[in-house]
Amino acid sequence: MFKEFMIGLGAIAAAGSAMAQTAPTADALCAKGEIVTVRFNELTPAGSFDGFNAAAVANQKYYRDKGITRNVQLVGRAMVRDAATGTWSFSDKRVSTAHVNPPSGRADTNDPAWKAFVAQFDANSTVTAQQMFCYTPAIDETATIVAEIKKFEQVWADTAAAGNAAGLGALLDDSYISYGKAKPETKADLLASTADPKKRPASVKISDVTVKVDGGYAFAQGVWTETAKDGKVTVLSFFDVWKQSRDGAWKAMVSQVGPVSP
Image 1: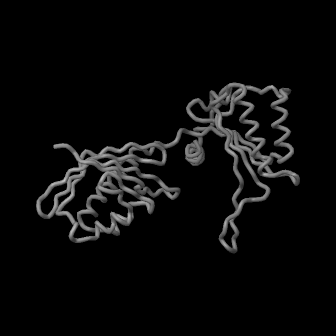
Image 2 (image 1 turned 45 degrees about the vertical axis):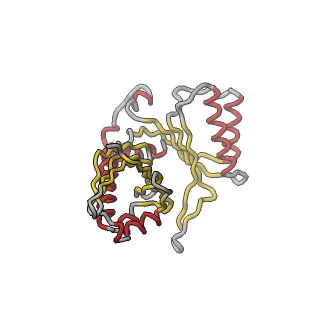
Image 3 (image 1 turned 90 degrees about the horizontal axis):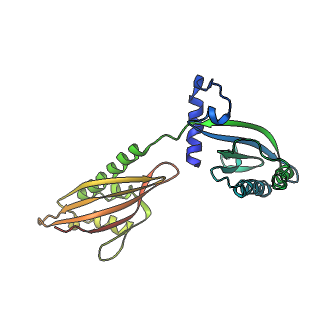
């Protein structure tokens, strides 16, 4: 949800004149998107971020107690960069909420539970700005990711055949571990084996590679065919788990290999 929210932030800016429409309700206007109410707040002198966050939790509970489950509330703190040092810190005043899929219709403002969380918000903050946005659906990057992971799997095979430990190391997370052989192999174990000329194969071929993507993870499986310099052929099935870091880079975290029956 958070990723979709951030992608939508860019998409809304690109919508341009397409947003110049009218509809009887917000839901009708945003029928193909996702409504997000964004509020910017400043903490009161006696308020705190913990108190502000507690108010948002109480707000969410109010909706859950009413049987409303589609909405999600995000609570954030403004981040400030020091121009002199380049370091980052949280603002001691500016906070925000993003209410994704807020329920339509007017709530009962006389409900004691409603009054309670509103009082929590008021005790800890004041609203400085509020805007409702219609965010377009997140861009589907599945096909691009699948192609990228398949490319990485081919690079893996190529670097193994070439004895290129540095190239292979660039694909692996530092915590990488492989299971299925006599004993688990760490990243260091695999790179040492790759760099050893005595263990270098004559060729490596991968086939039947498929990839499934789930959020920031990708799961690749296929067949690894390795031909040794003496002509011996080893065929293994492989299953690799890839994880995407915050900077967008993909690294292999875990592998499971096993023999393929003739």
